[in-house]
Image (tube, rainbow, N blue to C red; front, side):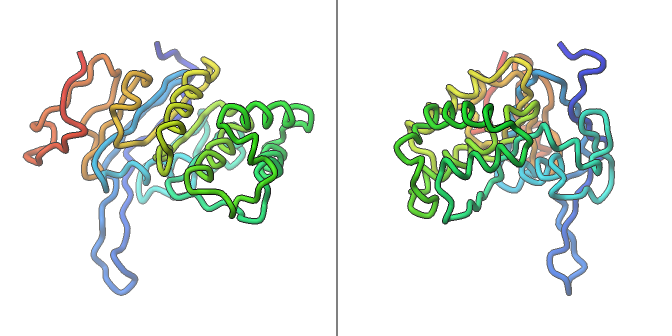
Length: 251
């Protein structure tokens, strides 16, 4: 499926460490020697237990963190070239939206920041308001919304400019059952050319949507490849027991 010239993300020997505290030289290893390639049109589910390195990896992908060692390329260019972020949509694990902005105005502003024309933005925002059931809240300020509705708005900001690469870090956070269904529906309605990286411990929600899986444990890759060949067992984790939500095989 992967073709030369369609490489979207390439990670070479990525390491990321954090100091436990400024007065303490001890380090926490978040990622260890990670090598990974993502091609156009692939839909990756990045999964693993808490503190596996999922969020750290995605923050490096969108240049919110720098790797301690190793190299990352985005659309064939070094990751420190910021204009390669223009076709990227990103949802962080913990979203902080401006509380005094009305929903529709915020979405239009984000579209403007991404260079979407006013006419296109109007159509795109209207479509997203319908898709995420936000129409009745379009003139409501963000601070007056519930956590679940704020998460829907945050998701819409990631989709608003029709990105080539969509990076979603725990998009299910605070969503109710209806919100989860709409997220799954919208992901399936994305243009076939869209590449998606989605980090979640909810394998049950996304394994049938994903084309590929990257499984992490303690910052190391335990599996990287097509869903059809994915099979994780306790032996992959070097003696560590596998959390229930990650156990099982795909044949």
